[in-house]
Image (cartoon, rainbow, N blue to C red; front, side):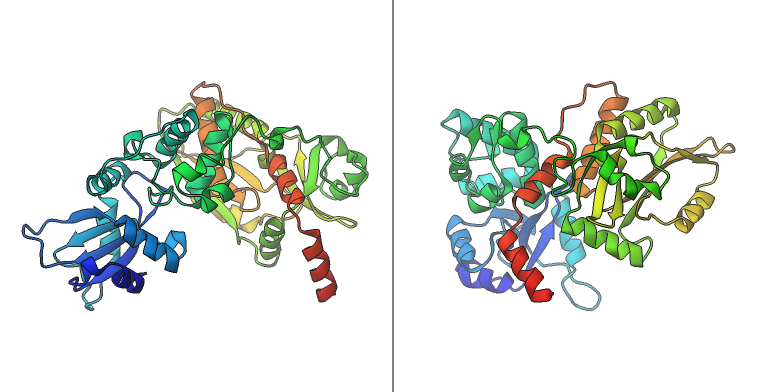
Length: 409
């Protein structure tokens, strides 16, 4: 990135030092920006300058590099920070980037980019508003000739944009965003109205060649003390889920997240427990067990069950016992624990969950749902995991699958 930037941007030929670094603006957790830091002895007042990468330079870089490797902003400093070993202090560069909010960076870029072209259609206007929400910058900072990724978007932000668009009855895909990052082009890909991906997915309709009834799945549950009547739905696992569980089976504890949350004294524990119960009932993925079926391999089954709360007085003892009880096939892949210390009156919540059930985006959605329920707000309707499973199954390349099965047989 640094080499190509020097070649495509003769304006910085005088720069003694140049470094590309990914920064996370202040207040952000998932939105990152690729920035270029350079030193210049032409700064009279020794103050940091923040500039937008010129459009012509962006175009040249885009011809040489993937979109995510094209820097969007320039930090010009009198000198780049150095470590004691005389290397560029990249940690300090990230700290400099993190001292600015996404809005501040957008404003500073706008000052060097000139006037923005505002929306001229209803769809463009909605798209601008959605980008504003997802990227946490004002709509006035977003023009129709801007690239979603140059504004600070990334793959996670793209997924959020797709979800937010669905909430206002607009349909687009993450692939659309990557193929058409300019908002004026992306607006042409937006479809108004509900997508057929929202059509219902009947229970047991995704189990392929299976008989499609819970009775056929009973044998898989028999060894785990569960009644067949508790099966709410069943569907295959994705290859990623199978891979993650394969590692966990061989190396217990791998791909299992254990989060400890220290609860504020004003948290009503009964209300907190009840909120989690409602959250789990609203999210079948949190009631999903993955089992091995002798005829169909790994299957995930949504089970009708309540949370089995684990309550103790010592966090240290609880974590030790939890590590001695590995997450296994057929067993719950999520655990919920409350630790209430009688001497300090402090309370902690421990959430254990396998990565086969969540990622960073879905985890934040679950916690948002929990927060809304606890606050008494009406939660938004969200698509269940089975809709993604149908999408994944519809996208399977049977020709490629057949080829590799024969090749590796």
